Amino acid sequence: MEGVPTVGEIRALLRDRRLLLLLALSAIGLGVFNGLSTWLEELLKPSGISEVQAGLVGGALIVGGIVGAVVVPLLSDRSRRRRPFLILCLAVAPFLCFPLTRAGGFGAMSAVAFGLGFFSMPSFALMLDMCAQVAGAERAGGATALLMLTGNAGGVALIALVPALKRPDGYGLSSGVMVGLLVLGALLSALMPETFPKTATAPAPLVNEP
Figure 1 (tube, rainbow, N blue to C red):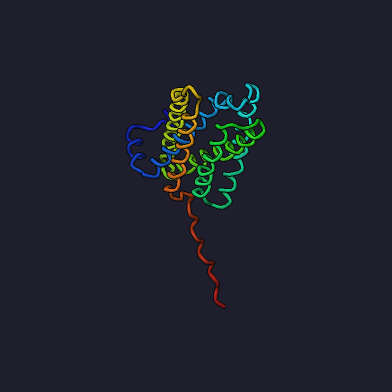
Figure 2 (cartoon, one colour; figure 1 turned 135 degrees about the horizontal axis):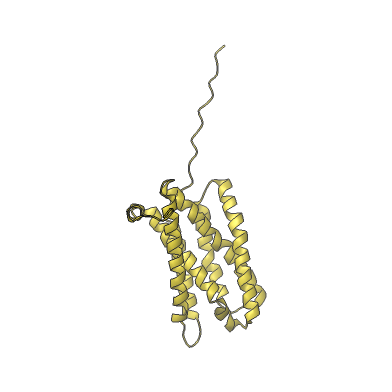
């Protein structure tokens, strides 16, 4: 099938340390985002957030992600840099994930959720582009398929892990694991080199001698 990487392509792609970093970041970023959004109602319940309010907080998370997915890649394109924006998004995420899983009012939780979505979703868009740039035109389809596969696998794992780590006093351990994973993602992102293609310097025009 077109777009599905072969075993040989996968082996070749996995030899690239940059792609391995992106796969790890995808698993962490999408994993935490999916785990958080799936169990958001339960995580917010100790704060007195009702089911309807939790749905609105989840909506703020998605809206923030949509806005960020437009704004951040646009700024990245204009600056012709990917790495600083990826690091920024992943570095901010743990500081917003932590208060979202702790006590707080509806308004504060909605604002934090919007901010978390704003910085979380663009990171995956940046990773998709970086993945294609690392793999090259011929292998871009296979590389992005791997990125999405690992991201979805991370999401499945975190969705299962959050309730498995629940304790009698609540989801404190689950929240700590998610924040810890985001911190790890931020540290790993600092190892990722810049992938934005460098433009060749145009030759100076010839000047005819009089």
